[in-house]
Length: 186
Image (cartoon, rainbow, N blue to C red; front, side, top):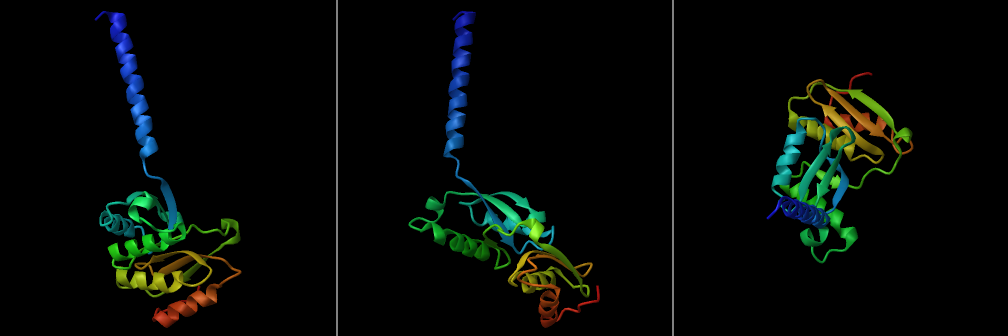
């Protein structure tokens, strides 16, 4: 084979390889973003990664701690065959809850614009452990109008992003008090 023939073969192989790579990308499952619940502290990211290792048909692509969002890669038709589109999210949520012993879940991305939300920071007594932090997180995160919550259990602080049209600081403090947390003055 002469040099010009070799060059044509190399170029042809490169085009075929590029075409195959493009075909493989087209075959990749779609990526979907969700809001994740239970991600109340940065160290919980590793716990979330471990939970997804128990769900092999769904790939955790990215974790956005600041916005409590995750990007997943999966084919809903393969993971949840014969499931209506509106039933996929509840089934995905149940899978993640099972894999994480009910410490993580998923829900749709928030629809309220960030400029309409308000940050509320509540000092509380220092919590003993991550489980106490999870309890404080859950009592606040489940309230209507709470879009995002972080708990620093070592420093004793709950930070929440709220929709002021749906909730306020007082409701968050009441929920924490009902839990037994010592709410301190701001």
